[in-house]
Image (tube, rainbow, N blue to C red):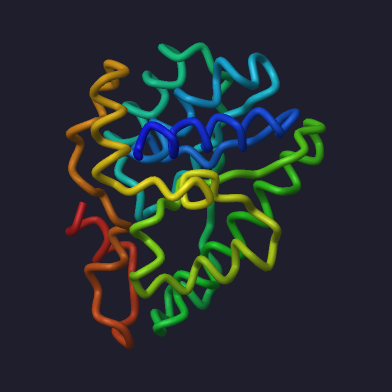
Length: 192
């Protein structure tokens, strides 16, 4: 069954003439980029947003992987909105809305038709207020659309020779700060 979901993912991507991939370098986004690259050829751009909640080591790994896959890679300086620092339960919504609005502008400037992210089918069961922002902005989530689970993504990644197949989950550092407790650069630095 999972092979048919991989084929469904490829069919979804084939229907996209061009795309900007929100690329953290984690297991899911690495798999999405690796599958999309041969289908979209040169009509693809990987974009990695860098801010205080994204460790530098992750950026270096993401850049190396994009280069290995032969994908143009753009590093975007991201400054989360004030709502992020206030740290309400909607923190992720405000952060994603600001970031993906920026990615949509970059995609438009580059004449890339879609902005896609690596939300997978398992993410649907989690509390993810950022997903609402993605839907509002028209961001596509091909892995979720194809019904691919994290376990399947890891299995396919391993078969493809992607070293990210066993990479541990790396949620945003801000998720380690209790809601209602203000987020500061100092707190994020101690969590990195």
